[in-house]
Image 1 (cartoon, rainbow, N blue to C red):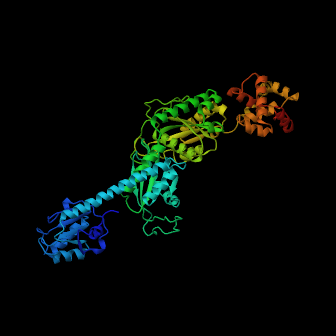
Image 2 (cartoon, rainbow, N blue to C red; image 1 turned 135 degrees about the vertical axis):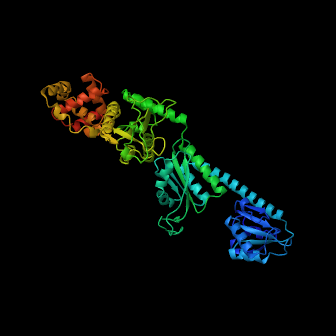
Length: 588
């Protein structure tokens, strides 16, 4: 515990006597200072015990002593030590009266106690407290490090931090969403700070802020309070710290305490910030390597090399490549003046680069702020949902693959609904620049090239229409199928499918129905096989037979497109025969 006036009074060798201010002895003493000046305030910092002999003070003048004591109290001096038996045998009445009227602690120092002894006692106690705080801080650092390395990671670290600061702690991701809080009751308290977190997140890192508690008049920390637990901190002090070493924060740490953290608590908070930075901030070289890998995977997909792309991606994007996906393309644009805060000026937008993504150059200036914010929001949403997401910067554009119907796709839609400037922040072109997003239709792994074209078409439409997000489904209103009602088209379709229909007519398989199911499911084997009521191996065999009969590869998007249109242009597809298909599955 810090040294207080009460501790000094109880010091057996000092023999101090309390003459006034008995109810204010629990204040910490930062230092003991000797001064005979009539006004020592300009030379004090606050927290001192002032020691005087009154050799140059008019201690018998009541008004002068009231002014003297008032100035000391206003300057933050915690008490006055008067040396008895030097200039005066005891404390003069005028000084004693002034101290009692002000409730200001006044200690009588006996003649046999030198001021140096008091100074040494204060210094020794403060040194011991500092050593205790540093030791506790190092111990907290060790415990926090072990917690960060545990299976629970940040959640365990927050629990340890909350215990060390005797308060609560919470972690927010780059989008401002609450990730974890400790103790459990702190989650609702932390949820109220989302606005403050977002404002801090938009400031250049590192950044910090201190915010107050709920409105005055709320209860203190009763059990079962409105926050649902033993922590309803009505007047707690909340400190927000940005996490990350880059230009933008990758996370935000909040700590709530009843008072400003002491030395030991400050060590714990700083250790938590460092550990969370290590846990959430990837090195520039690693990030560039991941971007290069992502660009390589995407180029393979665009080249129709799905199997190679899956092998290169490994577990990094493997889950994404196994599901129906969408391609998203986003780029930064100037925000129209009507949507901007007043006082901002126009800036020219850099043109889009177009074409397939390539690895970012080492000297790449980075994405526009709004596009950067979109990437952070999308990655954070995917991480919370346990999804894989592939985002590749390409000049001032962002090209990515997201799971159809997943959290990352929803995050893009939410970001667009907010105006496409959320998180761009002031400075670096923030509120003057927004983002436009194009989103493809759901596609399989073999149709990424088509999906990229769809996303780019949707992006172009979004720019022309002044919309933040356009999906490919919104671009193509109506249907092209009525355009196929032509004898020449129908003859072409019949000719393309004739060999398959003849094969089916001899009872050697349902190739036409199987092709229809496989194309309608974007090449998803399990889903198409389930629609047909056959084993996926049977379906794979049938698709190989289709390729052999037609002499064309189903990996060719043009072939898939022509076959799908041929199926649509001809008569209804005959239903599959599940029983026969099941028998053939057994044979295969």
